[in-house]
Amino acid sequence: MRIIAGSHRGRRIRAPEGLATRPMLDRVRESLFSTLHDWIEGARVLDLFAGSGSLGLEALSRGARSARMVERHRPTLELLKENVRELGLESVVELVCADALTLRAWGADARFDLIFCDPPYPLMEDGKSRAGVLVALEALVTEHLADAGRLVVHVPRGLLHPSHFAPTIAAELRTWGTNDVWLLGRAKGAQP
Image (cartoon, rainbow, N blue to C red; front, side, top):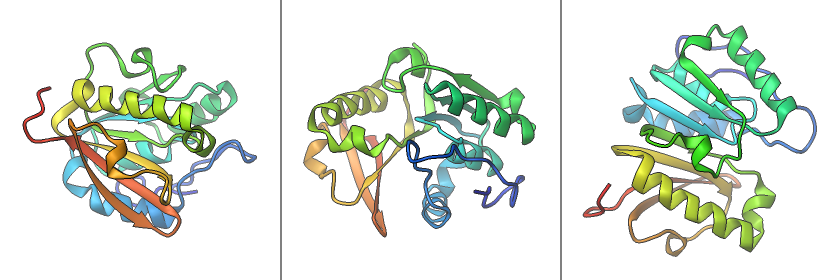
């Protein structure tokens, strides 16, 4: 896996071995970041279920100001720490070992310009755990997303529908291959 563009373009990052994590494919990441161009420069980023860090590190390479990266699996967190160190980004990255769907992971009063949420597919495929993710997404958008910010959710194609999101959330869908990427923001009239 590699950084696609920006100051670290072409630099390799390591991904965890095995099937427990599923990094976003380079071509999907490239399309996503082309879409997010207007939100990246100077952004404060929250990368949930960070894994290898490919989303947060790509954002930093493209001009984001800082990234809080959340990963609870300790061996993956260690690999993420190595990726951050090898890119020399320790001063702008905060690593958090926590459940990505909790306030502890987000920071009590923190606000972010760009939030990435790339949950494991089994978490989204199970109806009960998916409901928990959707509750967390509403809290993130209403309480932790900057006014003009975007929250990006990556899920298998066809898994979510606009009706799954709370009325306080404006949702826009992008589909690339078998990937659905939802861009979420605060709905017009919704109070922060």
